[in-house]
Length: 289
Length: 246
Image (cartoon, rainbow over all chains, first blue to last red; front, side, top):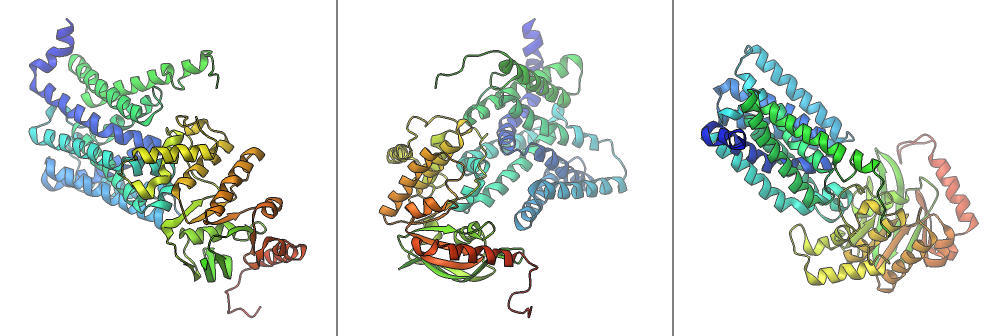
């Protein structure tokens, strides 16, 4: 019974195993990036970047059809251009990061909608928006795993400046020239992971697996190492549960995965021991010192 | 020898000068207070020294030090107090110039962190999250980080505002020890009693230099009156420097 419900779908169907591997790769790659987005109070930046890469992917699609390479490159280029342009404007002028990012992603989005509409709407474009996690081929899996590996390695290398850039950017700028480098490399990681995510979950759902586990993890642990671990775990469990739900009840898998992560977030808000609603309501004895 | 010399230095924002044609020198190893009315350009001058602000005219030159040898404590640090980071993590970043982005802290690094925390009276606070500290404790943490930076020139922007007397006394002890070790210390201060008691030299600023010298000769009623008058004069309509007849 349990075997049938939990393991049989993966044991029996190759597409389920591929979907699982793809989703787990995204969990490992995206969630640490999501944790840092949350800690830098840039959670909505993920959303903005997802909108920014969409036109690039659409252009790639219109140029060469449903091609992994063209859509990946299109998405990366569009995302990088928006990240760089908004970063440069906010660092060189008085405009703050959020406003300049909003300006550039809206320009990018409008451009994308314009291009798509002149070439006529297309059903396949729904794949870009909502992903094709049950139809990941070898090339897509290799891309997802490569991006996840590269992302984790880069974060490990960049860990100290990134933590400092989040916690005390003024100090980092006073002791090092790495501040700008850190910022742009981090934004490239956001773009890369969103591009990886949109192959499986679609551009908009990809943000969900980045942010929701990170936000949920905040209610379970205080240390940054713990946040990274717990959020990756929540993401992985959400992926497995979401895929199984979509298999058993014939639901679209991308939204199913994100909704499971959403339930994990909702539950964490209530029962999470670190500042959760229940923990605040229960009288607990305070520390002596 | 001068650690710092300002040559016709004009600093400002959006073409409005906040420090105007400053021409003076800060001696190596001196302990100097910068005083002046609100809006006199005190904080701006420190930003000009760190390089965060480029001069509109003139320049700052350093004697025997580089920008790497400067430690700077801003008036309002934009530290995210909710960031999940412990006291020891934050203080350890004072060793940035030695360990950089990837270097190992090592045992000697650990010992120096312990010593710095002890010097500011925070032994036992190592594992505390920075979000749980009071304002005074946070200032002690920032001083511990400054200690580890081991800088030849220390710039403090209103380091004692909004902290209790006990913390201020302890941190003044740290400042005195820096002075004793021959480091150059410049602090922006409001409280003239503190300046008189602990700072041998004072630079009074009111956009332009009012006076610079031994504290007793600078903190005079005449200089205060002049500084206030100069700041009020500056508040009138700006004109293009050097070209206006008005």
